[in-house]
Image (cartoon, rainbow, N blue to C red):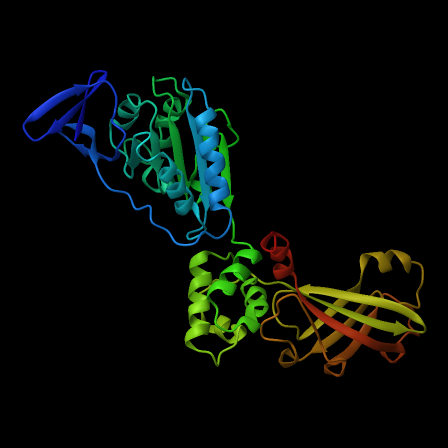
Amino acid sequence: MWLKSDDELIFINGDSVSSLKSVPNKVYKTVFTKMQGTFLKETEIKLEHGKIYGDSQKIADHIVQAYELNEKSKNLGVLLSGGRGLGKTLTTRLIIEKFKGKYPIVTISEFTPDLPDFLSNLKNCVILMDEFEKFMGGNVSGSDDEEEQTKQESILSVLDGNTGCVGNLFLLTANDIHRIDENLKSRPGRIRYHYKYESESAEVVRSYCKDNLKRKDIIEDVVQTLGCARYVSLDIITSFVDELNNFPNLTPLEVMEFFNIETSDTKYKISIAADINGKHVVYERVFRNYLDEEWCTLTPKLKSKYSDDNSVPEHINISLDENCIPSLIFGKAEIDISEIKFNDVSGCDENVTIEDIKLLSAVIEDTDFNAFSKRYNRN
């Protein structure tokens, strides 16, 4: 193990003690005792992984290259944020895989009273702080006093290289970006890169299914179904595919109904196309719960077009039985027009009645899914 002594690190190995100017190229974790303070202890780090899906390898390669090009008089900070199972840990493993044996690897998983001072003695190391916002949350003293220095604030000068800590690669992972100090955001001189892990792409789902799903004919159904999740991690993909392989009689939609996956806070939009005395008009309504009796309004474009035309109702009131709406809507779905009942009209001449409206078609749209898909279906 290693003990800090002035500007040197003391290596303790059994009964022998040797003084070294730098840390050997091994893997360490920080340990703290009241008698010795913070010191380094050799450890192992898991680097094994299966086939890599997504952008983890691409991101890791860029960080490795950037660190090799970085001035040794400066630190390079990297923040990887996002939900669990999206590739943050895998990315750090791929980086460490490249640097193991070439640089000292230091893993930190707890805040210690002398951590800022201890870090100031490290140079040319790869320093991993996994789940940074958890063990670096709160004040240094542990109090609730907002005026006291926070743990994250205590290492800002370290990250800047102002304390003698230079030439290091800092890898910070965080599940909750809102718990990261504002002084670490939009400060590329301190944290050069911020990789935001939001969701695995549709292409990752498709690729994994091609490799592992037994029923290849339902791959696109899986891609579409998982699109309604708040985010799609590799853990979600593998578990979902395992379920379909174990129960071949189930469809992706049926699995989704009981699987432990959080779906988006869904909003729906209903669009009703109608003919009113030869004029083609469309009414819309956005809602969160199933329609019972609701007013639908002309689309903004048509509302402007017919603003002076009293023969076109601005609003129509409809009733719609929830049984005619698909239980899970991913994208758009048509509604049987015979299920829609017109109750009233408003914003038009009194002579215009619901009998003047001829229904043409109706579509219900999962707006949250469509908004999510623009990001989720990136390739």
